[in-house]
Amino acid sequence: MNIAVFEVRKDEQEELARLKQRHNLNLHCFSGPLTDPSQLPDGTEAVSTLGQSQLTAPLLAALAEKGVRALSTRTIGYNHIDLEGAKAAGIRVLSASYPADGVADFTIMLMLMTLRHYKPALWRQQVNDYSLGGLMGRELRHQTVGVIGTGRIGSTVIRSLQGFGCTILANNPSPRPELEGMARFLPLEEVIRQSDIITVHLPLTPESYHMIDRETLATAKDGVILINTARGELMELDALIEGIESEKIGALAMDVFENEDGIYHQNRKTDILRNQKMAYLRQFPNVVLTQHMAFYTDTNVRSMVDCGIEGLLTLQETGSAPTLLI
Image (tube, rainbow, N blue to C red; front, side, top):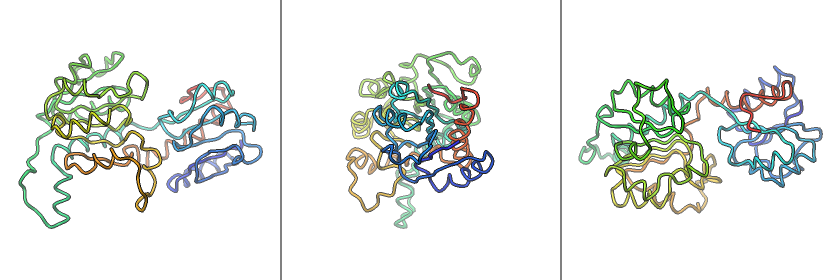
């Protein structure tokens, strides 16, 4: 099978080489995103990308004309792909999957960092200030944690939180009987109203877009801690800024950010960044922003590469695959 693989990172190269040898593949690897069908080598049957390739309907139609019949994204999210355009072009699309533990661990780490004021403590150490004033933290066992979305990652967060002894509330569109006894399932508005810490684990859909907004925050506890390792667009930035300024939000930790494309996962240290809200939020002592890295473990990188390549092979052989979208 001839596969063109775009946005290849150095950390993916070893696994790609292993898969190439194991399956006797013709892999054509490129470090940049897929932007034009002319980038495809002759005879390409399938392509694999990451999230920087904006796969629009016109581009997908052009890929189909070049003979591409399948596409995989080595990411869980797929909002960079026009699925309707892919369907119209006759291109099958797969996403990726990885164990939930890495993101769940990172989520709980962010909770602990905000509860224990790690960011201002780190700032002080860098200038040899080892004072304690203003750094008194809270213990996770005394908090009520609201988990919104209890799919693979949200449910793993709930299971991992069992050892801390905190009260856990949860909300999910469908029942999760296997989590009964670990978390108390309540309507969304009650989870938001009762929680000291709120963590969101939902896909980005029209219904979930900006689900945390001014109206939502108005019903939350004063000093609520918000955690987001899912999608930046789940939270309205203006509402977050107002919440931090008014101290309605006690702390905010986000591994994702609205309009992060072109910034996260790139070296931009000598560039002018055109994301004023990101720059403004970053300077607050109670805001922790990380560069979309909750997923980034050795286990997960191997899993995403395997899904991206072996998923295409499975699709070719059987007509389906575990992560098939269309």
